[in-house]
Image (cartoon, rainbow over all chains, first blue to last red; front, side, top):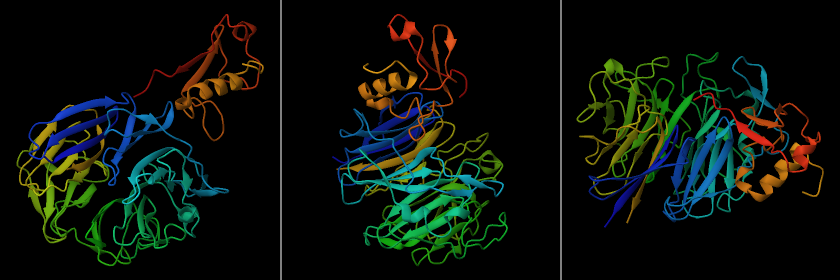
Length: 371
Length: 75
């Protein structure tokens, strides 16, 4: 029988939620790494029992954990993230030069083809790669060392590389997103990179259509269409149909186009999900109503999904890595909130039910589909 | 420990024995004490001492511990 394993990172530990393909009854495991912020957990597509976790606190810094049994036991791996060469400076919030300083790992992305290869997106923004199961890390230096690196500035949450998309059809293509620098792509396995932000407009920066400097919150892609990318930006939902070379706005009839996560239905490449929040200062849903919005047309036309979600007095947020989908025939959609709830839908979002209600603030949600 | 008892030597030995502690007490790049970690011994705060300053004799002789304490305040 098939099943799912939901990997939840929270402010005070990691949780693993498991169910069979019916996704009605859930086993809750955790908290793992209790007391620590777990920014992200990810499982290898090659070996679903191989999991990685980013565990960090301001007290004790960054720790990387690895499991080879689906999260039952964990082993501490390397936390040496050393910037290559002479790191130099990037821009600080006030535009002054600021040295590159490692803070934490925001996102882990296991290779699509190699069990031992995994990427890490970090703050201050850089991309690292391990080819030995996180026993060691090397910076993919071409990203940070391309021409615009010294101009990158942090967003309010820090200058983080939060999205890593590995193209399943072009093994040398990787797309990453950085808050608040923008989107970058390599077509040669990481040796060279270039910004792909044409069409983005950000009114809060000196040059709204600048090559870099855009606060991209999250990207999403359907594996069957790697040329089509979706973006939730600091204001605006965007779409590209040429691998990011150009972007168009698809916010359409959303009540607000500010938000963090974005996801694509596992079997419908034109079905996209976002969770709008009121504004950049009001990080909660409009009108106190928690609504996921779905477009079945790749954007522009959106419908509110509310069945089973609180429609009054709800002021939680859904962070950028806290929405995911499974690939069961009835695609499941999952998201976690800063209020500690993890919701699941087994009907593409038509209805929702909480898996758990009272976790610590959820930082990330990923889903493994198990056969 | 074969070398003189200093903060650096003690923490090096500790991390050798418990590799999972690497980078959690000292910044892995600079080797400096992490801001929310402090060192105490013999009722003295040694946090701002040079990591190569000899520890009190009582610590070197094993009569007193070197305390590594994480901050309790904060979220």
